[in-house]
Every structure is written in structure tokens, then in C-alpha cells.
Image (tube, rainbow, N blue to C red):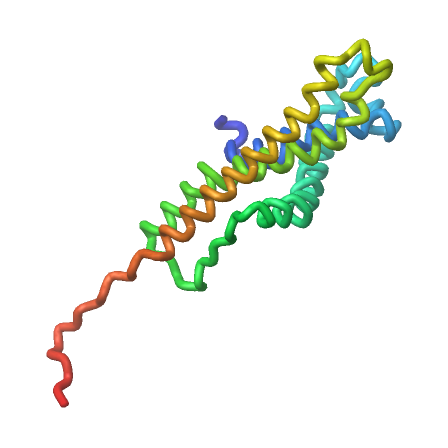
Length: 185
């Protein structure tokens, strides 16, 4: 993970953007000749000169997928009785900020992964559902199961993230006691 840290990435960002981006890269390859060639054509063995461009394309597609997920999937999740948390605009203490950062890493990045993978899998759907359908019944039947599992886990992770935000923001700020007596009057 040291080499990942040199680029300012962490595990959460890798799973949130790069992995769904790689799935999407393979999904669009049959339709975009440049990407298909970059990924090594039908053999799907990229050459050494194509690794960095493939990573950049995967990150770009991962960010695009995240935008689609934010606009479409998050709204759909909210329809399933997941109430959005609000931070109420108050400044977090150092301890609360550390708790919030852990909350993002332990719940929100996983929500992003599940929801972004759901969008990527849907993009990959046409390749997943090969014809003739009868020859690939188990794989084809698994597509709806994968989609449902990704949606349910994306919803759960987002709900847990919102619960954590509400818990952090519901805590009272410590009262600052002054050295001076309270005014009487």
C-alpha cells in the first residue's frame, strides 16, 4: 500500500472508484476500439505501455459512474426509507473529525463501491448475458442476484453512514466554563 500512498490514494478511494472503473473499462471495450486495443484486444492482456493509460481511463470511468450513482441510485435508495443525515453546519471538534473520517472509511466508501459496482455491472450486462442464453443459464441467472445484492448492500452502507453522521452531530459541544462569575441581575 506504500506505493498507493505516494499518489495520495487510500484503500477506500481505490475500491470506490478504480475497481468499478476497471469493470466499466472492460464493459465499454467492445464498443470503443481504442480502449479495446489498450486492453490487449480479444486476448485481454494489456501491454506494459498501456497500464498507466488503462488506470487513468478506469479512474475517469469510476468518477463518471460515481456521478451517475449519486444522481440516480442515491435518490432511489432514499425512496427506500433511508433518511439523509444533515450535519447541521456545525464545526466538528478534532475528535469528532477523526470519528467522521473513520465513518467515511468504514461505511461511505463501501456504499460508493457497492453503488458504483452496481452501475458498472449494469453496463457490463450486455456482455454478461451472452447468447444463446440457454448455454449460460447459471451465469445469466446470477445477474439479477448480483444487482439485488449490490443494491441492498449499498442501501445498508449508506444507512449506516447516515446513522453515524447523526450520532456524531447529535453530541453536545462541551460547555466552556469561564473564570468569571455569571452576571446577576
